[in-house]
Picture 1 (cartoon, rainbow, N blue to C red):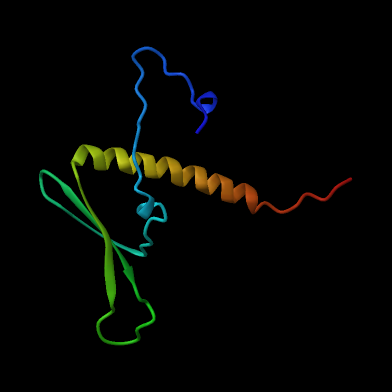
Picture 2 (cartoon, rainbow, N blue to C red):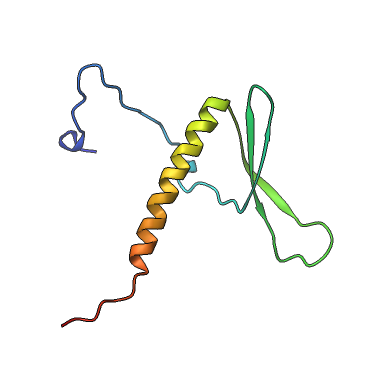
Length: 102
């Protein structure tokens, strides 16, 4: 990234500098989540489930497991709600019927 594209940091302001290993750039896909909790933490388990199975056990594989504090989960819920609202607005605008021209 060019230095000219990096916004200036105001005094006392902090920026996140998060490293992402190139092997993790693609991320993982999950179509199932399980949430468990205790007084001290939440555990979010994300898995990929094969829905094509008609009977018997449904095979799946855990792709990530995250342990987080209740405070972080509360902030995550707020961030998800905000993003979901923005997504719905964008999709709603995208799916509006075309207005006929004059």
